[in-house]
Image (cartoon, rainbow, N blue to C red; front, side, top):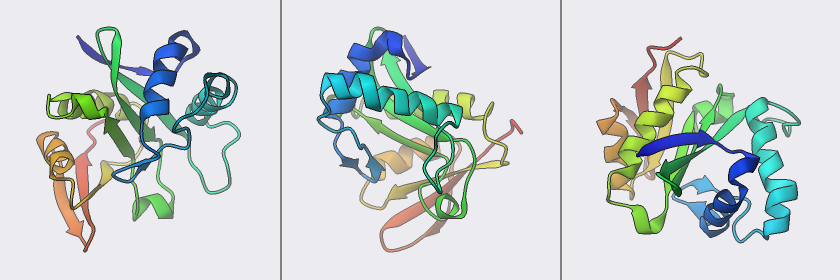
Length: 170
């Protein structure tokens, strides 16, 4: 069974294993904790993820961001992030939602279902009438995931597609 769950201390071991193996930059989704030690994950990274979701101790120019993990039964297969609202740099940049599916789990539908589940959560959080997403032009699989979830391309440039998905929640 697939489901998303907010980053939490009860699942520390599996979250740590996923985060440390997630590349530092995976198609534009950054991971400051690539190859992080278990101790640093427990004492620094995970508390930071949880605090970000609560809007606490945010660095200048950052907005609250909820870190979700996509689970297939008892195994993490992806990470999804919801930015609660957009500052100007996010409005023309990364947008509301970013995600990464583990390399060994790509092409199995996890991205599509994970984004669907994340959108359900985002509808409870995000006040805008549309979700803004951005995808690299050289990542057609991720673009298909967005389009399957109701997205439409609203702009493009040499390196990116800019996608909007309606938010019936606000």
